[in-house]
Image (tube, rainbow, N blue to C red; front, top):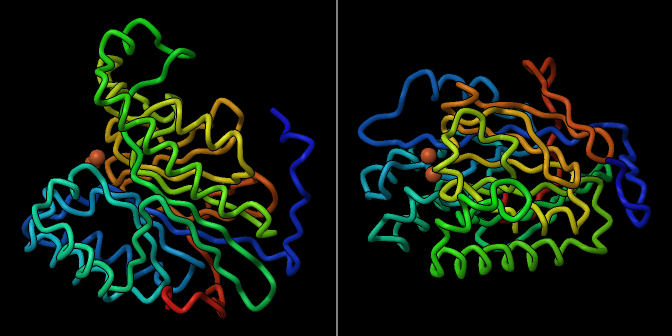
Amino acid sequence: MNPPDWLPETAFPSNKPIRLAAIGDLHLRTSIPQDLADDLRAIDGLADLLVITGDLTEGGKLPEVELARELFSGIRMPKVAVLGNHDRRSMRRKAMRIALEASGITLLDGASLTMTFDDGRRLGIAGVGGYGGGFWPEEVPDLVSARLSKAVGVRARRESLRLQQALDELVGQHNDANVVVLHYSPTVSTLGNEPLIKYWMLGNSLLGKVIDEHRVDLVLHGHAHLGNHVGQTPGGVPVRNVAAHVTGRPMIYDVTTHRDVQEVDRPWSPVAVTSMPERLR
Ligand SMILES: [Fe+2]
Ligand SMILES: [Fe+2]
C-alpha cells in the first residue's frame, strides 16, 4: 500500500539512516541473563537509540526493578521504554519509575519526544503501553466480540486515544522518521503462533487504526511471546515484534526513507550520536 498523498517527503539530510536497537520482554526475575547483558553491551553506542518494549520485569517487584536498573545503567546509548503488563503488576509504581529513570531510561506512557541530531536528522518517538481488546471487525470478529468485555474495551479505547494524542504532538515536527513504541500489538500480522483465542489479550486494532492515520515509519512492540518478528498494520506501516522470545537478542534496524526499514545483522561502524534532548543523555 502506498503512503497517502499528504505525507511529506522524507529528507534524511545526511543520507544517514536512523538506527534503532530494540528488545522487549526481558522478564527479569532473580538474575540478569549473561547472554542478554553481553548482547546489550556489544551493541552499546552502535545505534541512535535503544527501545525497550515493556515487560522489563516479571512482576514489577523492586528487586526485579533493581536488576533492570543495574542492567541498563551500564548501557550508555539513549534509552526509551514503555511498561508492559508484567511491569504494571508492581505495587510500587513510583519507585519503579524512579529506578528505571535513574538508569537513564526515558519512560513513555502516552507521550512523545523528538530527538535531534546535529547532522540535521530528527527522530520522533511516540510511546504507550497499549492494551488488549482484539482485532475487530476486520480480522476475527466473532471470537473477539464474544470475548470482549466492556472494561477491556474502555481501556483499549483510552490507550489508543493516548497514542493518538502522542502522535498528534509529532505532527508538524518535520521529523525524518517517526517511530511508535508499544507493548501490545497493533496488528495480527506479528502474532505468529499465538492461539487465536488469546488474540484479544495481545493487542487491538484501534492502535493500528490510529497509527495508520498518522505519519509513522516503524512500530516496535513486544508481549506476543509466540508471535513472529515481521508484520505491518492494515495501512502498511512496518511492525516488528521484538519480544526476546521471538528475536532471541536485541535487534537493530535502519530506517532510511519513509517506511523503509532494514534489519542490520550486526552494525559495522559506530553511529555518532551527537545531540539529544537533555533527558536522553
Ligand atoms: Fe512478556
Ligand atoms: Fe506482556
